[in-house]
Image (cartoon, rainbow, N blue to C red; front, side):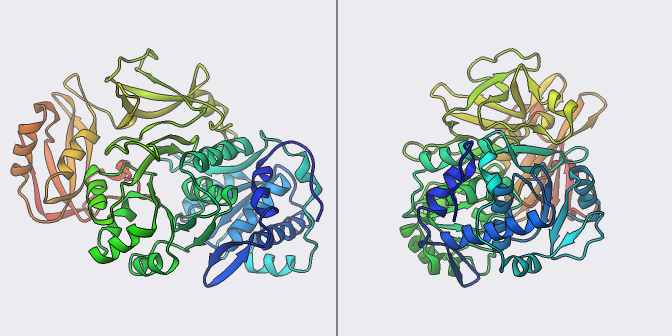
Length: 502
């Protein structure tokens, strides 16, 4: 197999494993094991096939699949061809799919689903079979790619309007992987259990890249299954696990004896993609003997901050900036805020995306003086730790006072009857806006009781005007609450208690 020469790109990092550990078991999926050499050869053959089918550097290749080995093959093949990998959320349906296909204008769509597509559709099993007889030489073009070459477009969840494609480069992914492997001390000795979807930047940018850079052994799951999760942990005995808050809530259902055994061989649990409730962190620590490491990232930036691997992992905090990431907290006028005051997070660094796909105006609006505007509100503490306060768009202004929903949500979730809470603002004739709270309950509780507890601990203007019990909060595929869907739809509300407070 020929080595390539040329600009530095992700393949320089991946080859530490793909070539340096060719005979080492790299991946387990559905009772089959693959060496790093096999992973390299499979993706080389697929890259040769895509080239024969006319896929050129810069072409987009959309992928709509559940977790499987073929997603890894396709991603690496794109990286080797200079094509752009565009994963699509497997939960998306016709309207969302049509938007992405029309926006990305891909050369092809790879999927097993029956989809009416405006572009050619290829089946992954057919591609794999056709590629099997081709040469496993790496395409020569791989050597001409540099760090600024786009390698992926990740479509944001689109909480308002249609989703936008964040263009991520080889450098973006590379610096993210190097940071995580270094800061979380991921090595080839680790055993990594990955249940996160590879269509999301969490599973792709953190999971897949940390695995390929470190050379650890990874078991990939098609999805997280709460029914078989304990058995999977005990069988594979991972040392490393990445999850989202909803997964960690499910892990709390493990019997105490199993939780203790699992805590004995896992060295690091990481949580992200949504805020982890402090009480979940505390209960997990009590049952598993581990403090979950919480971090903070975005589709446009990947990882920005992290609690330390060695040091205090503070409940409710996302830690400190990762190496190379510069941070500013600014008010609405773009002025720095005082320490301890709430401001919008702005970032600058090699992790920041190249812009939104074919959206120059949206890209320009996303930056202020060269700094990426996250829309996330935070407080910086004197010792350098940051605490998120919610989204700028979630901010409720009631009677001239700023209300940050997360503060109220965390207080409500401390109540023994409340499993989850989401606070949103609704129009108010007198105050402009007023907060209302949607709650998922463990056990019945009267709205007036919750209101009185809030009045005892929170400023009066922060007390929700109404408490609405719902069966579940609407979430996206990564467990992030979709507050824009909380517009009081009848199907969400239970008939038990709705009510109000003065």
